[in-house]
Length: 214
Image (cartoon, rainbow, N blue to C red):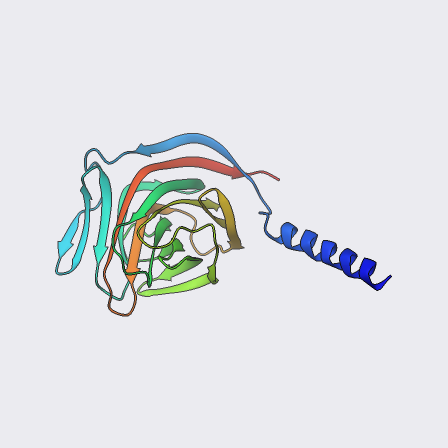
């Protein structure tokens, strides 16, 4: 009898875990606002300085840094409720880093906005930037769906109303709610922790209007 109860409890726990790993909303996609293959610079930010580079290069948008703080490159189109998806390839070997997508970045380019991030050692986070501070709304958590090291990850960011969600390689990672920012620019961000170097290539970006389904 005890064995049967043990099996039943295990099944219930499994169902609870499966339920927790599903998003509470499925975004309904509308018009495509941008389909970018980075064949030309277009409206993307270019910045070159000591140890830092943001530029369209070899058919992709490259973010290179050896700085311990976040750097970001933005597209000069204002968006509100969108789903952003991009292929992000880590070209450097240093894994203690972070890279990903920004939505609703402040048009003054001050670092404000939402960050949807993965790391070279297989972690993810959803963060909020306020000036020089980037604070997790969803703490760094490991997930086996994230490709580690010099690999490519498809990052999908959902920014609709106060609802924020992150998908990596087609798998739901996390969701949260925050109403600090209602609109702004899309962009890419990266950092290298503990003095390493990070070189990330972003390609095949899409931005689509979105609303929340049930």
